[in-house]
Image (cartoon, rainbow, N blue to C red):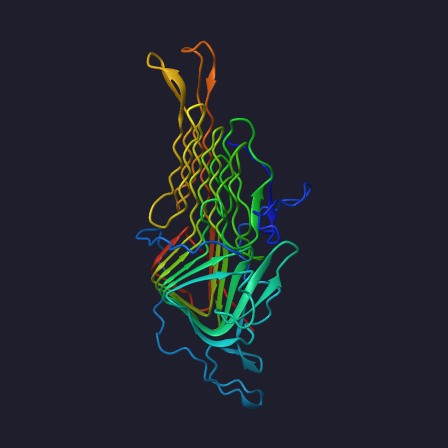
Length: 421
C-alpha cells in the first residue's frame, strides 16, 4: 500500500524539549530538482556501531599527497604560488555552502577531540567551546545551525552530536575524521537539525509511513529536501500510528575545509526505528544529511545515512516490537508483529511486521498488513499494520580536484565542485 501525504519542514523547539513539529497547514512542499547546485539538548551519549559494509564509490584520486598548507606570497595584493589558483589579485579560498556563510572566517587553533565527547548544538554552541569558536546561524525561517570555526579539526575518538540544530564545521586548513563522528537518531530521538515531518499520524490500525528524504520511506513514493543541501536540513521523522510515534530523523552535518578533508574513520547520520504499537506500528525515520567540501577530499573510511526500521503492530495479544535503528553494518529490520486472538483449529491472527529501512540501493519496505479473523470465537478479531521503514539520507561531496572516494559511502553520494573566490 502506498499513501502520499504532505511532509513539512520543521524546526526543533528547544524551549519545550519536544520533537520538531510540522509547519502550519497551507505551507507548500517543494520537491527537489535532480541537479546539484554548486553554491547554494540534550541526549545520552551513545557509542555508534562500527560498520564493515556499505556501498562504495569507486572514484580514485591520484593527486600528490604532500603538505597542503598555503604558503603563498600575497604581499602587496600579489598572487604568487597560490595553492588553489589565483582569483584576480589574491589567492583563491573556499566559499562554503549556505548563503548565510560568506567565508571560513577566523576561529580557534587546532582542535583535537578527546576519546569520547558529546556536543550539544544548543548548550555547547558558544565561543570558546570544545569545537572552537561556535555561534548559532539562521539559514532560513525554520532552519538554524551551530557553526564552529577553527584552524583544523581532528576527531580520533567518538564525537556524538545532539540537539535541535544541525552542525557546521568550518576549518581554515584541514579536517581529519579518524574516529567516529555521529549525528544519527537514537530510537524516537532525532539527530541534530531541523528537518521534515509527516503532516499528521496514521489513523485506526494503519501503520505509519517511513520517513522520506533522499529515497522514499516504506509505504510512500515521495522524496523531500534537495540534492544541494541548501539550506542544510536533516531528514524526515517516521510517521506515527494512532498510538505510538515514528522513528527520529537522521541529523544534519556540514564539513567545510580550506585545504583538505580526510575521512579514514566513520561518519554516520542514520534514522531511528519506529515504535511498536498496540494498533499500528510507527514508521522508521529517514537518514540525514552529510555535506563534505574542500579543494581536496580523501575518503578511505565509511560514510553512511540509512533508514530505521518500522515498528511492528499488535492487537489483544499486546504491542508489536520496535524497529531497529539505522546501521552501516546491516539493514535495519522492522519490529515483529504480535499475535492476536484465535484458536488452535483455525490459527491466530498475526500483527503486521514493520518494514525494513533503506540501505543504499536497497529500498525501504512498507509495513506488513494486519489480519482479521471471526471463525474461532464468534466475534471478529483485528490486529494492526506494521510501520514502513525509513528512507535513505543524502550525501554530497564537493571538491576542486575530484574526490578520492575509495571507502564505503552509502547511499551513493552526489558529487559537485567547490566554489573558490
